Length: 164
Image (tube, rainbow, N blue to C red):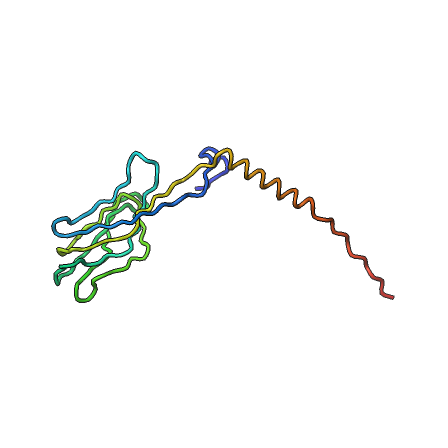
């Protein structure tokens, strides 16, 4: 699929996206075995969940605690993937780096009784459109660049020396 200039004009000019981040945390246990992260359906913003750490909470038993994430893949199908298998004696915490998922996302305690604490960031992406003022500023900058180029002195070709 190609993206042409005509298509970009129809979509309207957009500026660089702006990003806001908020702390995210939830606790899973046998009493609350899942958490669903959802975007507000009324806004046109993109909501991402960036998971950073999964760790056992205070009072965790000597058992395996498997944490699973359910989200959409690139084909729009819902898939479930285990992201951590924690045990108090050998692996009480897992660092996921910057594991980003687009809302909606469900985090489930697939096995074990927890408590398991999940932390990360709730990212909101704002796609701003250029205003008329910003377009005028861009045109002004182009004119300034052109005038600077015109002000440069012209170069004269070097004189050739004759060798006798």
